[in-house]
Image 1 (cartoon, rainbow, N blue to C red):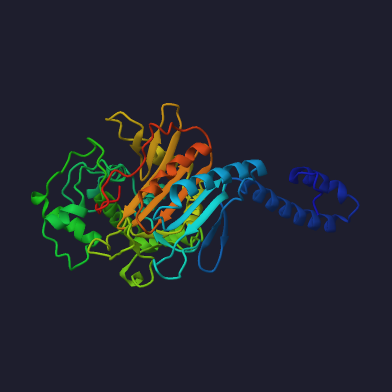
Image 2: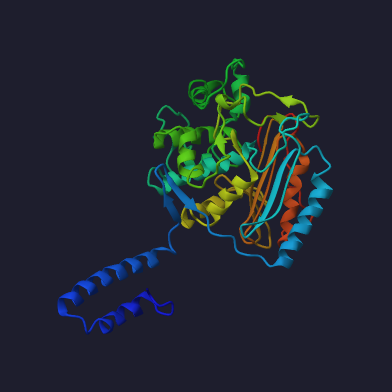
Amino acid sequence: MIPPALSVWNYALLLPIKFVHYPPVKYFRTFAFISCFTFLLFCISCNSGTKPKTVTTTDSVIILLPKPVPLSESEKQRLSYNCRLWYDSVLKNTSFNGGILVAKNGNIIFEEYKGMKHPGLHDSINATTPMHIASVSKTFTAMAVLKLAEDGKLNITDLFSKYFPQFNYEGVTIKTLLNHRSGLPNYLYFMEDLGWDKSHYITNTDVLAYLVQRKSELKNIGTPDRKFSYCNTNYVLLALLIEKISGLSFSDYLSKTFFEPLRMRNTFVFSLADTASITHSYDWRGNKIEINFLDQAYGDKNLYSTPRDLLIWDRALTRHLLLKKETIEPAYTPYSNERPGIKNYGLGWRMNVYPTGKKIIFHNGWWHGSNAVFIRLLDDDATIIVLGNRYTRAIYKASHLANIFSHYFDFTTENNTESVSPDSVSTP
């Protein structure tokens, strides 16, 4: 047994002294065995701090998250009190139906669930209830693309047409799809405008086909990389790219690369087979909103998850367990600077960049009656997550919680709510 006070190398230097009285042959064999064992220990000790901890099972590799950094009891109570104060005064008494989770250093400091999966029934929403995360789905799509880039399967500066030769839009790169600077029109509108039969579900392949075959009929096609224009079409195409390069379905790639290794057991990509079991969405009055012809396209939306699973997602990204720091840092870089202001977009992430140098990395979502807020305060190692399946604008005020960690903005000037109407089908 190695004495605790000795390093591996120090102990190895003591070995010859320990065995000087042994017969030569016995000494040689023993020394050889101990030397090999010591070398193995040394290799393990060198690698343990530089690579993610993984456990290989018969089915997959499991990525182990680091333990949360402890908080003092006073800090924990302060943060929890302020979260409770905000929740009780802003969200609790609205039509909010869902879950909220706030964490610091990986520690959950506030968590609350309210309402029923189906209003009027006794099936309470809890920590394992998956809800539609709408455009927060884009964070998974973008990170999947960056993972393929890190693995050497693509370069984000590649033209999209390199992988889809029929794509007849010059200058559109993978990067301009990621940062919403492609100039493409939004399929949420043009498919219907071009006469799509709404009795049939639109697929990602259908979107690509309409872009290519009916280009002359499309309006509002912009010049690539001239300006920012938030567009769901970009992420529908990126999902196709992931499938083309990986050889897997979008769902299978995300499951194999992210969900299963991180044990995000309540996160999945929606398919029609899930229709009967999913947590449906409702308008602010509590009326169920049925799925429609737009609900089979994915990449831009159609992921279901929970606040706890999204916290796992945040921890894995923050600790660089999925992507190297040099791979993910560009995702947090603002690329649309042609207009002044704090709001910007990276690669799959919205951000507020304040004059003080403070930055909030986030993505909001809205689809049918589902709302989602996923806020990451990287400098403060804090996370704010709110998911709901009954529409209320109050969810987007969760950004105000950033100020309980440190001063980010003045409430009189901050307006971080979604700038779309309640009837809009788009996910900002």
